[in-house]
Image 1 (tube, rainbow, N blue to C red):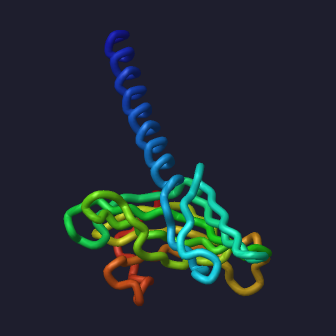
Image 2 (image 1 turned 135 degrees about the vertical axis):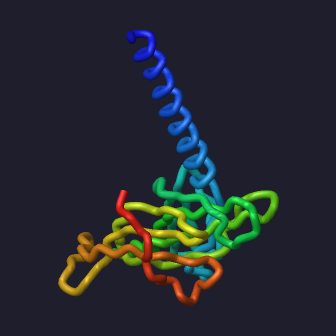
Length: 176
């Protein structure tokens, strides 16, 4: 019995270690990628270093940050594994745009191809892939909310192949 418990402990530790290593690898990759901005007059792209990047154009600037939320899937249905990450974009002031960045595999590497605006100061609970779409569970602002405290809980699906219709009915979405 004791040997079985010890073996089970080793298996659990190995699984946890592999999960941690894959997160570390993902954070290293996504925290050093080049992302498109919504501010082409300041900078079209920003390459992050340790998850952050800022570009100045005179007195104007745009900053991006990756904070550890990501998911994998085949979002353009070409058989290659793509990714999505949550990034924050700001041009100063109280502006903190939360965005979903689609990173599409071009056959060699992941490339940021499309961004979906999720909300100003949105609070992200989870990002998951389901049937080629990205499911985001989050809190967004509703009337009466303060800037820092969005309270409206929404669960939306985003489709890379149909970007003009970014909210899709949520059949089968389950809380984790």
